[in-house]
Structure formats: C-alpha cells, structure tokens
Length: 318
Ligand code: AVJ
Image (cartoon, rainbow, N blue to C red; front, side):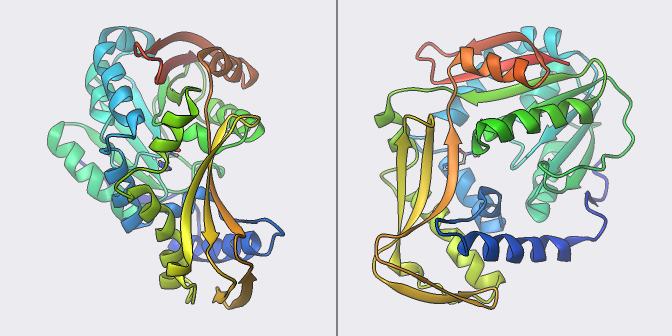
C-alpha cells in the first residue's frame, strides 16, 4: 500500500513555490547568474529527465541498472536483508525495485521534491511489488528532513550520481547528514558517475536529439509558468562543457542576444553570450569516491564498475 504523501516541511507546498521565487531572484541577481538544479524537476522536467535516461548517449542509467542486476547477491549481503530502504531523490523509482527485491525490503521511504511525480511513481512500484509498504515524503533532501518513525537499521539509496550535483564540500556535508538521518549501523548504496573521456561526457549532456537542451530550457518555461516570467526562451541556447579542473560537466543557458525580462516580479537583463549556470555534474574516479566516503564519516564496503568504468556502484557502512 502507498500512504498519503507527507510534506517534510511544516508549511506545505506554498513554501516550495516561495522557495522557487526566492532562489530564482537570488540566483539571477548574482554577477554570474545561476539557478539551483533541483528546480529542473517539475512534472515536465521529470518527464524530460526520464527521456534523457533512455538516450543512446546517456550511459549512466543503463550502466547502473546493469550493476544493480549483476551484483544483486553481494548487494543484499552487504546492504542488509529485510531492512527499510530510504531513497533520496526517488524520481521515477525505476531502479528501486532492483534494490528492494534483491534485499527483500518490506518498507520503502521515497523522498523527492516532485510530489505529483512521486505519487505516480509509487503507484507503479507498489503494483509491481505487492505487499510493499511505500511511504512518499515530498521534500528537498538537502534540507533537514522530518522522516516518519522507522524501525532501524536502515539502508539509504542514492542512485544516478545525483551526488554529482553538489560541489565537493556540499557533497561531504550531504553525505554526513544522510549518515545522521539513517542512524546506527546504516548502509548507503550510492551510484557515482566516473571521470572519463570528455567527449563521452559532453555527448551525454548534449545529445543529438536535443532532449537535454529541452530539459535545460524547461527551467525558463517553468519560471514563465510559475513565477509570471517573460523570459524569451527562444533567445537562449543549451550549452554543456567539461571543466577538468573542477572535474565536472557544467550546464548553462546562453543568451543569444541582449535580453531583458521579468521573473518573480523583478526586472533582469543579460548581454549576448552571458549565461545562467543551471547545473554541475561532478565526476569521481573510484578512488576519489572512496575518499568522499571517508571524508563524510562512511566506511566503504564494496564497489563495482562496468568493464569500461563508465559508472560505479558503492556500498558504504555507517
Ligand atoms: C540526475 C543529476 C544525476 O547530472 O547526470 C542529466 C541530471 N542533467 N542530464 C546528471 C542530468 C543533464 C543528472 N542527475
């Protein structure tokens, strides 16, 4: 059964809207304009991301699914059987059944910022795994979370290399907070994208069909829809670049001409060529990923990669 969604913040969804307005105003007022990547995921954005995961150039999802499938037995042994699984950023919950079925989990707590999408995902999941108790929690997992009372020990699931969205300091802080949230004897199953040939990376973030471009540009449409914006979306273009020094792919929206618009009640202008920085996607070698574990108080137990080392799947212990 699926329980009714709980909002992890005490003030309900209107606080989400005002957080969006606040963060857009703050981000567009900086000398280098930026908007947090979590705002990609409205209903349309979640659907576009889902389409990205099926693109030929976007290797992470299918590679992680193969790793979860191929190492199911070791995964169950190391991540613990019959535990409650807490997923941070559940999205479509497409990979979740692999972990839940491998470990024979009874209760599944799914945290995601996109409430409508989450409820839809959990409906499909409980249909697939009858008897599973699925608990949606609508909220931003980078903020302090109020989880329902759960019987430990718990296993966290943080898939898709979402950790890459944070800079190194932010990643350590977040992984530390997961350790505190999950409690004693916790395990964390975490998927982390590897450092690789920049051409492969740039293709994965700028696909030939233009789906990633639509995903990026949807953020501007969302501002126009939800914050009464007047952004001329056709005057912007998607850009994805690898920054070797930072070890990350950066996504930007580039103004193709001088533009002026309003968003959330304020006037903004941009010069031709100026960008809005919309996402960082940091990549880690397997050794860097283990370093990240230790720096945030976790003990790495196991790591698997595919033959080409396109993606890594880790189990860490609290
Ligand atoms: C969901 C954050 C892991 O960084 O690969 C995909 C999002 N952005 N294509 C990633 C994304 C552009 C994705 N994460």
